[in-house]
Length: 188
Length: 188
Image (cartoon, rainbow over all chains, first blue to last red; front, side, top):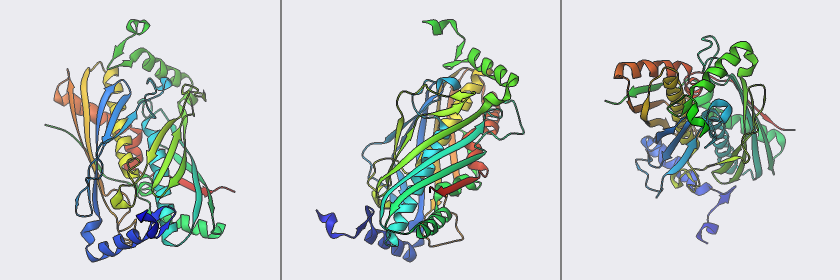
């Protein structure tokens, strides 16, 4: 396999990672990405999202022959039919997925071998605001707690240092911990 | 079908919605929910999240016989293999899924019929911070833009009013627009 001639750590092509960093240093606009999603309401709490194209590294990406399809729904206690996880559960997935990439890519860049990595997440919220019963409580998570377990050739101290760095550079953690402006418009 | 004897608007059981609101007014703790996810890193940019149980309405939910499984990965340009959408794309899905529920449930509560509802989303970010090339740029989305299209028996003005209300009460929109505390700990 051609891939065996490349430098792979944690399944990450470190040569490509270094190449990407050098390319962006030379041409900063390559770092600009626009991600997209299209969502259609199906009925009740059920909706379906398709994700395929994006713009990045100076061009439209064409690597995905078919869109990814994600179902969203509520459980019966929240008036849905469990066609998929609900929206706030999807946020937990997005967060863990982002931290996994950050952890593993940065470990690879530093020559740290990761043998396994897993996350347990929980988020607490109160329905009062969503149901219009309070304008003092927030509708979203009051807090999110994440615990991770990792097997690696690096000592615990080194892994915690890595995790601190990952937390500073994680896109989804930033989106959750800090405000992102969102504009919402009704099409003409 | 028994369901036909119930008041269904937009596929939403309005009787159950009203019942939920009354139950929470009588016993506020029923509004407290804890959602959960477990994520396992597979290799490279690929991870897998399982979502099943949660606590809410005063008890552990048992409505899901099997966990939902969500794949996360990066596209090749970001050193992955497209086993799933990436983490920031999953955020767009979570946002639209949440707004769909808010829009449709609140429309049902107000007697507004929704015939169709769809969302186009895009989020812009710059990789400099993720790659450690800037500590001035943010790693997450600089902005998210969402456009929605809706067919309904309600006039445009009424739909925009509904959308304003939904924006005030949407859990995921709140999570994105406002800071959420996240604690991250390495298990012992």
